[in-house]
Structure formats: structure tokens, C-alpha cells
Image (cartoon, rainbow over all chains, first blue to last red):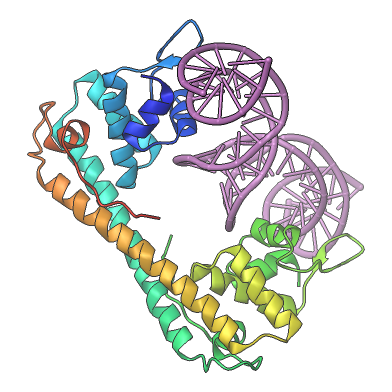
Length: 138
Length: 138
DNA sequence: ATAGACCCTGTAGTGGCTACAGGGTCAAGA
DNA sequence: TCTTGACCCTGTAGCCACTACAGGGTCTAT
């Protein structure tokens, strides 16, 4: 199949597929005499895997690691689990940060009177107040 | 005060302050005869404001909008509130995405047996399975 | 013959910094 | 007097994971 078809089947953009090839996530496929890329099902499965990993928030570097485990065939389930748990922790920590943002924001927004005069306690608090937002450390 | 002192007082990096100046978030300060930037308290308050906004997750573009409201002096509280609520919605939607990731991830990780053999249902599910992750519909 | 869908390469842009390289300034101490 | 070290300057390149062209070629249907 050609690149457009692969894109359709996996929900990727054509440019993204070429990008993955350029950075070594996908192998270079065979080319026809018109120089078009020709993909087979193994490519589709690999790209699907990459996309699923990305949807779960893994970085391309982590995806590369996972792929090299699969390609090498000599990984341990424990390694994969460690990578997964590490990433899960990162996701949880992002959630915590965003929750903190949400709570500060909704508190600030609730102080708005919503009128059309240029006085706003939201802005004033941020500009002058002893505003204290528990930011993420690191 | 000089740029290093301003950085210390606001918790910014020196490079970030220069970057904000370059992109028009902070005004160009006066320079001494040694060409060092010289800041006064108005700069500190403005930078503090920017930092607080960034901590709340506002983009620099949104910060620019807020600053131009303050600078113009002819905004309405309702405008600010709209911007705040819009951003709050964005934060909430990110939290929802991350929660979805978290749940899929923790489910996948929990299927790992953790042994040192190269078989792992986490990987297999992503690679072969009819894995279904409810991704954000943007 | 031509339109339109598809493919190619290569480069530049996005956001919000961060990290140099390569240089200047200034005060304290040996 | 010299040197060390902390600070400052400009300008550019790099980070991530794409995305968006520009400028061209190919293929199929009408």
C-alpha cells in the first residue's frame, strides 16, 4: 500500500509517517519505480504500535526503547513494566499539577464580578496580590 | 536593579527575562553606561504577573492579551473572566485526557507478570491487540 | 489535453524556553 | 598590579513532535 493508504488505516498524517522514517522510528520501505514508498502489513502494525504509545503519552524516545526491545527480542517483561510504571508516575504528576492549576484558577475566576468596568480582582490578585500558587517543584 | 537580581526576586532565569524582552512581553529597560539593563519595581511587578500567569498555564499569547488589557486600562472584568474561564476549560480538558491515559496505562501495567522473559502482555496488547484507547477528540 | 488526486524532497516554523560561544565589566583579594 | 570569579552582553542553535509549505513529479479519469 502507498503512504496515503497507510495514513488512512492508522489515523496518522502522511507527513508524520515520513517524519517517523526520518528519525528512525519506522524503517525505510521499498520504493516502486516511480519512487513511491510501498508499505506492507508489518509497517502498519509497527506504526499502529507507535501511535498507540503516543496516545498513552510516551515520548518518541520511550517508543524507540520499546521498539528496540521488540526488535531485539531479548527484553524482560520487568523492563517494560518499569518503563510503564515510570511513565504512569509522570502522568499522575502532571495530573496533580493541572489539578492545582484548576483549583487556583477557578477560585480566581469566581471573584470576577463580570461587569464592563476595568476593575477585576482576578487581574489585581495576580498583579499586586500575595498570590500563592503551589507550583510543581521541578 | 540588574537582571540577576530581578531573576532572583521573581524566580525567573536570566535568559528567560531577556527572552521576554525580545518577544515583547517585557519592555526594554534603561541601560547603564556599561550597557547593563537597569530594572525598577514596575518591571518586577510585571514580570511577577507574567510568571504567575505562566504557572496557571496561560500561554504567552494569553499573557500578552492580559497585559495589553492592563496597559490599555480599558478592559472589562467580563473579558478577563471569559479568558479565565476559557483557559479553565482547557485545563479541565487536559486533565480529562490525562486521566484517560492514566486509566489505560495502569490497566496495561497491571497485566505485566514482571518476569525476565521476553513476553509481555503490555507490549502484546499494544502491538497486536484490538487496543482501544479513548483519545481526546481534540 | 487537462484536471485533480496523489506522491516526492527539502526546509522552515511552532512554543517557550535553554544552552552555549565568545566576548565585556567590575570588585575583592594576593 | 595582577588575577580570579561573578556578573553582564549579543547572537545563534537546540529541544520536542510534529506541521506546513514550496516546488516539483506521477497517475488516472474524463
